[in-house]
Image (cartoon, rainbow, N blue to C red):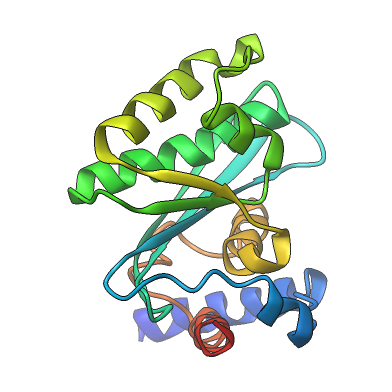
Length: 193
């Protein structure tokens, strides 16, 4: 009964957030912005969502296979000093997650073009991102990760999760125990891919 009550409360919370933060998906845009990985490879999407007041940030990482199926993921809430630092921390979390799983040759995607550019170049980084970007570059080089920018529409699942987590809609174990709304969102997203 306790588990059913918890699931009911989470389901109601997700319904409220789904209404408050709808994901507007134009199917034509979605199809044209999809990365279709070669057979046998993985991709990892990451995103950060920011509170309107304060420096609280939600980070989300989603690992999928070449069919678009959810393999694993993670959610974290941190405090940051800038938007760039939050996005860098999301990419760093993605790299650390891949290292913990022992994966290499994975494509890491983010919807923050400026931070992706800093991950793949030797441009001078903002001071608040220096350590995070050094970690990202080191892990990326050691494990042959590639980094690419994707428009928010192509990163819609992680974008929705990060925004929802920012409003304490679900528990941190959402990835290991996804709600029906998230499962449906992932199924739709994998069909489009």
